[in-house]
Image (cartoon, rainbow, N blue to C red):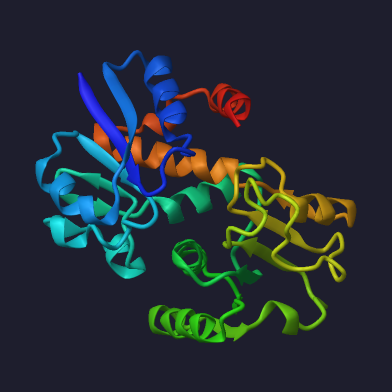
Length: 271
């Protein structure tokens, strides 16, 4: 019986066990998945003593686990964050989850202008995915200008893509078609009334993507939909990053064998 877990602080809210147990059920796998609350001061003991076959890692441990790993794969090394561990090796499947979610929702990224809201770990993973997709331009909007500028410089080091930083209140009128991606926790349960930016300039030319999956449709997305924008919630990204982790742990294309619609139904019922 293989054993897997997600570690984080906090971790009680995580739906990863629901996702992975449904994958195992569908495919008849002998495996279990749990969530383990690991505080920063417990991380060292946990990482050196645990006997799990694989781990998912969430806030605040995505970089803190580095000293306990034998190696990092290329994307984890470049992004500077790990959310999946297998055999002492760290991986980042968040960027894969984002790309798969765009694929599921027929969002074409190549040569598009993209606006990222936020400049934390999720924003960096999304920026990496955009670089890999050869977008036309990236704008980073963050309340803390220094963080936005830091991520902007990072993008410049990784690619030749045009990139600039801004702040949410100083965004110019959206005169061209943008794919806007919220990588902040603004609007996440329980603070569901908050929005990461106003939607005054949003119209049917915009695509709005949220990395939040609880609630399934954030207030920001609801407002955008009323303006005619195409919207994509965070559930597909969450599912896809989890499937990518399973692919790594089991060494096979788990993601091609599961019933995605059934997975979605189970997760929606759990939110």
